[in-house]
Length: 128
View 1: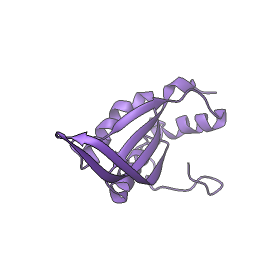
View 2: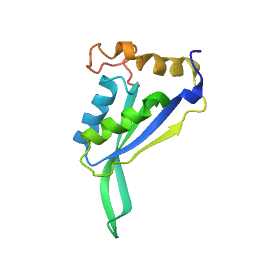
View 3: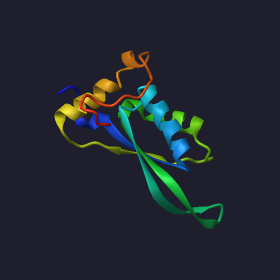
View 4: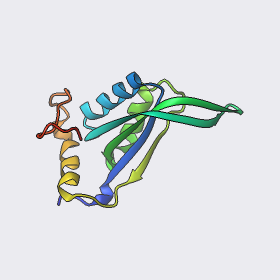
């Protein structure tokens, strides 16, 4: 296995709507900052903002990335996000299916960053 599980991260990001989540997801994958992104609609968030409790629908973006990409992921999300303070937090990957973890690492190879940025399905038609 290339690398260790502790070099991988899962980024948890929230977006205002599906279009914003898709734009951010495509940028992260297209620029090889994440190997794959999952978009989960249906989130309802409640939070303190400017002295009062807000409640709003949001979309969850889960991006599989690396520790080395964390700063770049935050910067890219901030550049594309409409919120002044977007939620971007990282969770460590502490294990998993070794071939899948190797695939994640290989898809974030900076040498591939110049390759095509179109999103494609995996070899069996599945998305990551």
